[in-house]
Structure formats: C-alpha cells, structure tokens
Image (cartoon, rainbow, N blue to C red; front, side):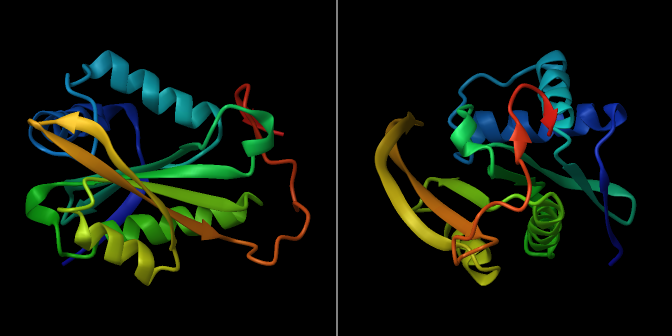
Length: 185
C-alpha cells in the first residue's frame, strides 16, 4: 500500500465535499445536519490557508482516502497557541493507517509553528472508540466530555475532548502564536 500525504488544493474540493457530505448525512463525526456545498468548502479551505495552517489530503495508490486540517481553537487572542484537529477518512480506507498518518503529520506541523496545544473534539463517544484510541496512542490525553450536547439522528451525542500538549511543563511561548485576524505573526 502506498499512502501519500500532501497539501490540499482546489482540485481536491469535490472529493473533500463529498466525503464531508456523507459524514453530515449519515455519520456523527460532525454535528452539521445540512451538507455544505463546494463554495462553502472552498471558503473553509481558504480560511485554514489564511492562517498558514495545514489542510492535508491522504491518497492510497493515488486515490483520495481522506483529509485533515488544523483550525484556530477559539477566536480570542489568549487562545492563539492552540489549534483544533479535524480528520475525515473514507469508509473503505479506514483501519489502513490513514487517520494515524494524518494526525502524526498535523502534530509535526503544529510543533514546527511554535504552537502549544492540539485539541480534539471527538463526536459520539459511543461509536468513536477507534478515534479516541488513536488520539491516546499518539499522546493526546483526556480533557473531559461534553455530555449529550448534540442532537442528531434522534439521539443525544457526547463529545470527548482530548488535548495534546507540545510543552507539558507550561513554559512561556516560543512564538507569538496565530494571528487570529488571518495569519501567523
């Protein structure tokens, strides 16, 4: 199996939009209930790129297998050292190391930018055991659970919060962090 990661480009948007749309309509990894169209997904990609954060695409043997990206954790300036992780993998590419490769790459790119925290918000704790285990195996620790905060498919869903600390000793920042108005400072 040949697994390749690369930066997302505009030509990836149809595959990204289709995968995300399937998750919106049939999955619980997102709490959106109406799939966004190509224009909205293009705006989301551009917003991530404006912050100089990675949006990666995974391919197996040249075929789209999933994507992952980092986004600012919260818009307030004090949060500028933290980013949130989002990962989506095609159903037929799961359990082949795609999610692990994407998450490892995001961790490395966060470290390269002098940021401090990666935050995972894993929806539907009941059916996301593999995702939670993956995050733990790469050093994420449990940070809490929002219980029954999302209503989708006729049931309440939890969100498991996980956190990866690049500087667990809590020293002062080594960079100015994200410029939450659009790029890195």
